[in-house]
Image 1 (tube, one colour):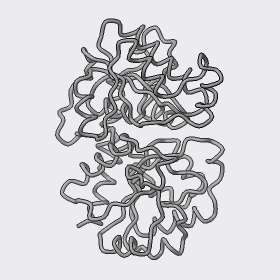
Image 2 (tube, rainbow, N blue to C red; image 1 turned 45 degrees about the horizontal axis):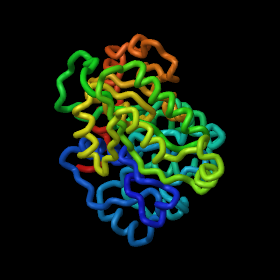
Image 3 (cartoon, helix red, strand yellow; image 1 turned 90 degrees about the vertical axis):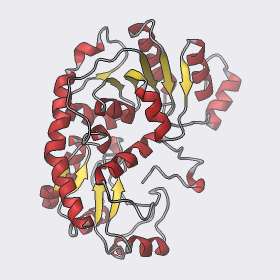
Image 4 (spheres, rainbow, N blue to C red; image 1 turned 135 degrees about the vertical axis):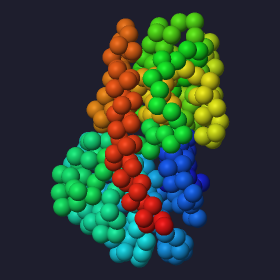
Length: 344
């Protein structure tokens, strides 16, 4: 799982509570089956780890967006090393990396690793139609084993939640932002500006999924041009000056508590968006990169750019919920039944 970030990786990878939400959702769907071993996909799998894996029933690849031309289930993984893992390897809700230049043609070794995985399993689970199209184009011989289940987060609570009409939501607005990438300030400012315009008079809570530190380049530019360049802390301070509450949950328990008190989500964090949809609430997503596109196409929601006069009119949330239910009743159930055979 990418939810576990080792100390050695924290200089370039910040822990993301959204990744933990994926892991929580997968564990919910597995029911009585619990993890005996938890490993980070940000570090190499050592020989001792392989021994521990082989003492279990299966190795589950817990979602997120690592799939690209040079995909490995862990750094420096090779086909020979993968073959030392004797138990089934099950991708669960895995998606495309989101950068087109890294999704051109799957490398020969990655393709062979994917084939090795699928010799041991009936089905694998993938999170959006663009991911599925990439896999089928590069691995047509395995096409019948790929299931487009959607992300497990969008099915959170599915077993126990009654199917009701989507709730347009009153009360607080949960706002999410992604303070990274070229031009992030202008992109995320559109979210704050649009939230202020579209939800006047409603409490607004800025919820941070990651804690980003300013890059060395941005620190230098801020010293040289303080009026033009700001870092994440400056952005959060601006939100506070606008009257927003700013929270940074360390755990998914804290995050779910914050989100339970909000009636609607508005922002750029994909898994906040999917979580609100799973709770039958309205949610509005701004795209940061290509990862959101496939979800919009699959579930039928519109991606925003901040210029919308009425974002509610752009998405039929009843149709979105119907598609989420279809994924649960069809491919997700098929995949979970297959997984349970391996875990029995």
